[in-house]
Length: 286
Image (cartoon, rainbow, N blue to C red; front, side, top):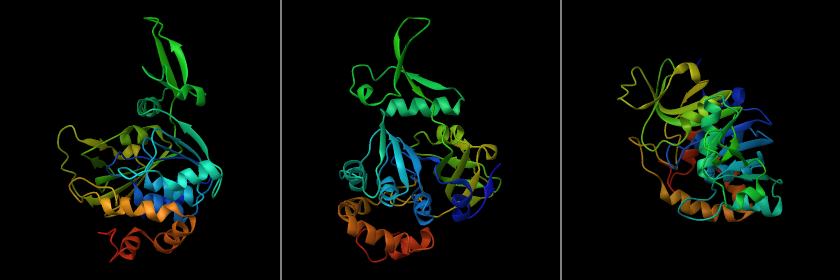
């Protein structure tokens, strides 16, 4: 049953040290505000899941929150590497990190299986790839009907899933539209969930075939305007490409990364103050 609350309270209640955490969003509606709050509250020993981990996961890893990452592509989209992820993998800074890599289709099948309360997902894939040499959690089974060889991957069952959406109503029903990845499945697969939204309204005015998460599958709903920045929220604001480009310079060096995080995230009380701290910089904050 959904509780409308402040983001800091939701993170404090739902995200616990040692949890498996999914912060999902596919180029769009990425839950940056919630990721920042995880850093502020210094959550530790997290296993983080994401189809496409980008800058927010770089922040979490570089801040020492993460012990393992389960993913299917990692990078600063349109720019290059995630330098804090690379530093953790290659040089154990700030902590060693375990890596479990999948294909996009495999990750989607894992979320779908978790959402359906099934033990594993099936797909035609992985055959002939090197991923099977490095990931022992990818198995193969024979179809009992056709004899076809299929890949089997364990269901994702996060302790907590965090997503961003456009709207929620006052009961906690959540509406999202635009580029939608596996957010719905990730919420349904999780034990607990947090949804940040651009606004809480009296009536969702949901069009047919929109993605609506009913209040009884949502844990916490938090209004955080601009909470997907620097990614975008269709109907509200565009992607801030300058931020992604600037992040490459900020994150290359440990000292510049730490200094930036201390000033703009750890040194701010919430996401609104974070955006104000960027005022006047070329990477923008609005």
